[in-house]
Length: 286
Image (cartoon, rainbow, N blue to C red; front, side, top):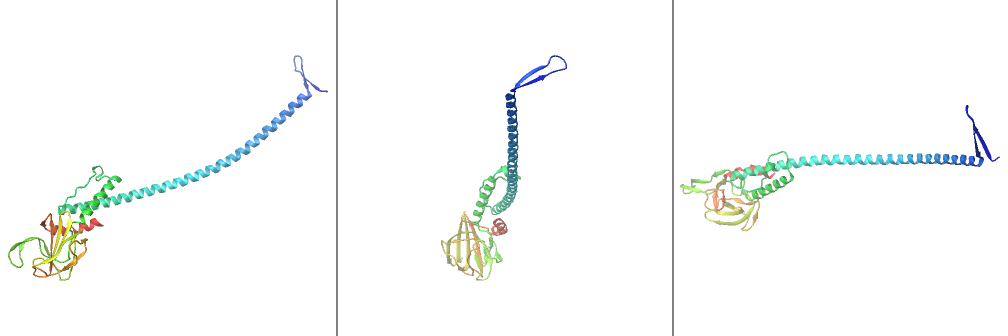
């Protein structure tokens, strides 16, 4: 029997008769079963792929989170270092600005003016730009370079026995002009240069005895007279603090001492104010 008769009846009305070939029914069942198997296999494959993808995604997410954490730590470290550097820069600039003000005080005290660039935008404000820092460094360098050539401080540690200006001449006992300062000392005491410069004279005569003239540039010269010994010669470069000779009693002198003079633009000036700013100059050079 190759056909199946399917009769459907209801409570009312005539019944219905359907004829289905067995082969067709078998094909439908086989196809449905195959479709179900294929759907099940596809679902299982999908579940397996989803699990693998989820594990891969979770692993990548963990790696990304670790990288983000490392990056955040690095950024935090850089931020802290930046803050520290900014703080150090600000402190250094403040110290440099303080030194510049000290140097300016020295310049004002001795009456020497050096034209420098000012930055009105950042004069005294809490923010200090790198450009201002560079200008401040440049200005300080200018000041320090100039300070090296200005005679500051004491050439010898001795007591002052005669000041600059009018006085009674110790030999003639008459009023006379004294173009320098006399320091009382002992023969053999060391004499030091008070600024960088070039020796323009190292000789002897009946008035100044053994003496040295040093040119410092910017119009400044220093004079050291009545020496016992001289350790430098004409044309020699000297540095501030360098020993250039010994105190003596040569030339027109009444006893062992150093005559120390400063000339500015070929005119004798009072060395006293240049001696007084020695402490300030040390502060500026630290």
